[in-house]
Image 1 (cartoon, protein in one colour):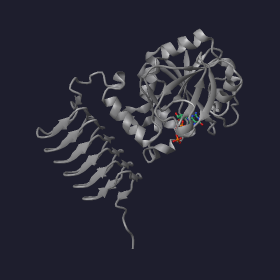
Image 2 (cartoon, helix red, strand yellow; image 1 turned 90 degrees about the vertical axis):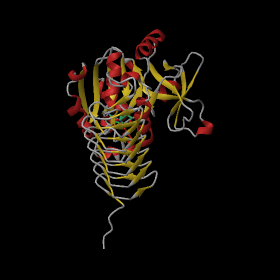
Image 3 (cartoon, protein in one colour; image 1 turned 180 degrees about the horizontal axis):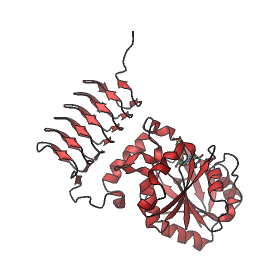
Image 4 (cartoon, protein in one colour; image 1 turned 60 degrees about the vertical axis):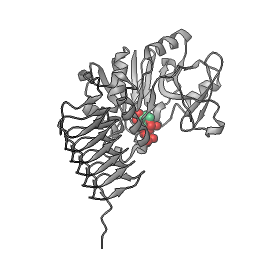
Length: 368
Ligand code: GTP
């Protein structure tokens, strides 16, 4: 079976991290977000994937190339202007005559794709949608099922109180090729707004695929990005941990850690990271390559990308520091998202919820 992965979005909700790094390439456990999904597809016998791209997402092709490094075959189809999920599928699957999978490119899941395909075939479905049960379905597309798990209704982003169920569209779909004829490849259209509700209302073979529990997260905003790193580091998707992940959950072998540093698992330090004396590192914590954490700094439950510097006596808690950012001595950063190359000045206190743009200084330099 072939798959299409949609990677042509803008990633606006994940700003400022996506101002300089494409959403599909933001690091999760020091690997591009999309790599986790591609390997999951490969491991379920889907080694051939078409990436539905826009010009905005060209960096994906530079990183993954023909896919051979992952043991897969990747090809790329470009939309000149974004076509939305419907237009993208219509364009990428033009001429295909076998059923195929489609996935959003920002999903992390342990969905049993093999069983998903088998269930689709057993039901003779035109379209199957993987579902996930959530506490609060209001940010998602919610489905209503009949007793045979046929989808009878779609409601996009209902208010929490009036949501008709807690089962949401989890962003992985199985298409019969006949359905592609219903889609327009020449204009922007979203299957969530058009095809899915139309098929459901017409009583055709559109089925939900339910499962008990399991892990699912769409990495759409800074909150879910932080969760993705923390929960994967805690073992939510065991196959996403590196092959040599130690039983102690302290992966520090490529780093230089002062003997007097105190580490509380799980901690993953990238190659060339240097940790000074008296430092306290509390997991779940990831650092990228070549980070420097100065003496007596405290870093907890955070994600540091490559080439980040946290100077002595600084405190970084529940924070994302993008590549090349700098937290100067004694500064305190809690619950913030710090863009590429931004500088937090010595002694500054960054309040929770702050979003700092790439290259900015905190506090902002005053003129005049
Ligand atoms: P936001 O701007 O924050 O909403 O993010 P996004 O642009 O990624 O949108 P969304 O999360 O709804 O997209 C879900 C998936 O579809 C992501 O993997 C996107 O990259 C992808 N996607 C969104 N719009 C398009 C499009 O027009 N064309 C293609 N090929 N992919 C798209």
